[in-house]
Image (cartoon, rainbow, N blue to C red; front, side, top):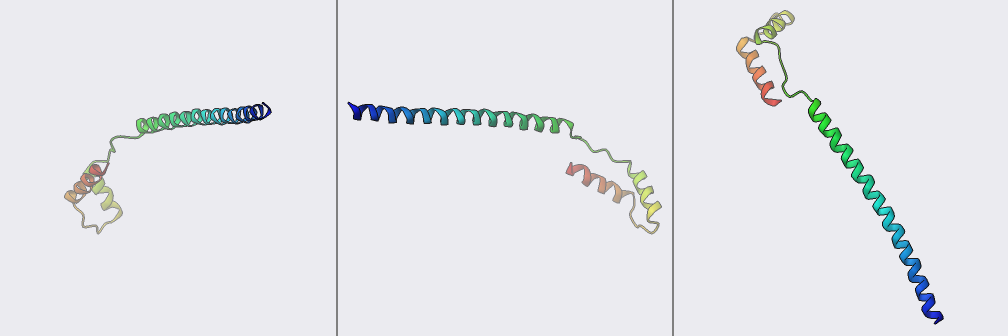
Length: 91
C-alpha cells in the first residue's frame, strides 16, 4: 500500500509539472500570436503608406537641369525619356 501511495504521489507531482509546463507553453503561444498580429498590422500599415507610383519631373525639365549643371553633357531628350522609362519600370 505504501508503495502504491508513493507511486501515486510521484505521478501527481509529475502531472503537476506537466500542467505547469503546458500553462507556460500556452502563455508563450499567446505571446507569439500577439507578436504575429502586430507584425501583420505593421506590414499592412507599411504597405498602405508606401508610395505606389513614383512621379518624376517632365523629361524636358530634367534635360534642362542636366544641361544647366553639366554644360558639355551629350544627353538628349530621348536619353532622358529612356532613363525615366527604366526608372518607372523598376518601381
